Structures are given as structure tokens and as C-alpha cells.
Length: 205
Image (cartoon, rainbow, N blue to C red; front, side, top):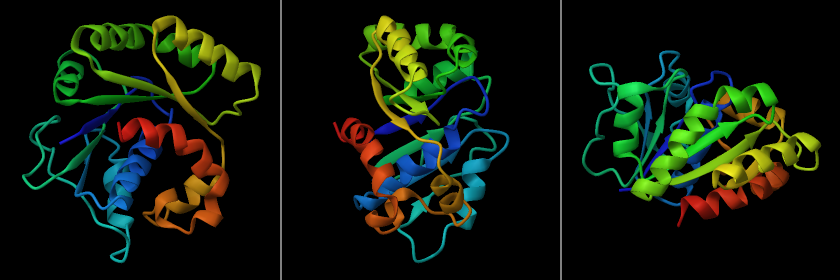
């Protein structure tokens, strides 16, 4: 049962956007998907309540008593949306469960250095425990100097940048309806699906 943890201790970097779309990707492949939300804001949980009955099912489970809890039996794929400020015991528990950790990161020098210690720890866990870690540049144009700087920074840690997701209203409009890029006609979100290709390939390895 693959467990993908979406994590970054900094708030407002796009964790819930990434979490819901990863869950949507797995569901589009016919998997039995559980999306857990350990964040106090409960953005992913709210999104699930907005999800229409006709969409491919994505389930959740109660994390109120235990921020990091194992999902119910019958689940084939798990996505866990974690809170800002993730550190200490909660961080270690999340890593114990995780097969893969996906880190949304905006290519701002302030965001990069705010997460430096977190990324260092992930890089160390990747070497010690063979944990798969990937970085996703959020709200960024891959052709910019900012994107180059992000590549330069994470490559120095030995962590791969899986893709860059542009700043588009598609994510906002779909989220408002409980949907993802993978729930609508590909022609409507063609450019965005192209940007997801590297992430999807990594998720399926």
C-alpha cells in the first residue's frame, strides 16, 4: 500500500492543492484511495465534502484522535496532507508511514531557506531509509531564473525536482467543485497535465 505524504513546514505553499490532485490521479487509475488530512485547517477534508457523487471515489478516515493513523483495510493507496509547522514527533511518525514524500516548494529565496532544515532532514532520511523524496515547484514558470535557483538549491541536497506547476485558476475552479485535473476532459487542462507528467511517473514507480 503506497503512502504518499505531502509535507512542508511552511504554510501557504500548496500542500492541499498537491494532496487533492495526487489523490485524484490515483483514483483516475482505478485505485482505492484514502486522503487523510492532519492539518488543522482541514482544507483537504473540506474538498472531499465538495466532491460530487459522480466523481471517482476518494475516501477519508478519522484522524481526530491520532494525527497520524493507519487507514482502514481495503485501501490500496494513501495520500496524507500534513500541517504547517510539521516537526518533531509528528514529522517522525509521518516518515515512518511514508513510502514517498512530496514537498511543494515555491521558488522564493525566503521559502527555500525557511524549509532548509526540513529539506536537510528529508535528504538524510532518503539516504538512510531509502525514502523516496521529490520536490514540486508551485506557482512557477519553469523558464524563469527563480526556477533555475530552485533547481540549483535542491540539486545540492540530492533531491529531484519532479516538475513545476504554473499559477492558474484551473486549480482554484476545480477545487471549488471537489475535483482535480484528472476528473475533467484532458483537453480542458492539457497544459497542466503536461506539467504533471514527471510527478505522475514518479508516483507510479
